[in-house]
Length: 211
Image (tube, rainbow, N blue to C red):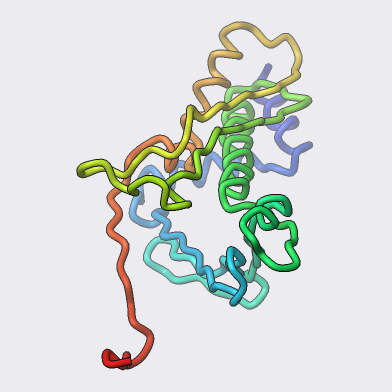
């Protein structure tokens, strides 16, 4: 694919690759200006298992960005059958937290692979990511300790990731390139690598220790 075809293909997908290339040049010369700090807040709704989670403000290059239109809400809970089995009254059906993480993973992988394909000049007519993982709820149910020595107990089986793609004249080299592009996904990196984490507890107000 010629560079002109590459640019036209990107434009058809709503992407100005000249602007993208200019931004990458800027990012390469100003690494601190493109560093993110991302966050989310989850507030328990007063019903077991149900949380109202929100995302909105974020930090880019040390600048906090917040605007009313950027206020996204996620209602987290459990499957209808699970709520019923756990004894919740009037059980309902909501996305389970791990499902939401997996859904975010598919979006992030698609973004990384699509960007890499455009950059390389690979025309994809179809891109679909399917992910799945087995979960053992024994720790959640307090049937096992949460920690084994200095490490948390692994509650999950292998993470399965499948890319389903269709494009013009995809070579074995192209397929290998697309597979390797999964490693450019931020959420994939978040799940695959260990990151330092020490949970903190903040007490919202005075506590009556005698109560």
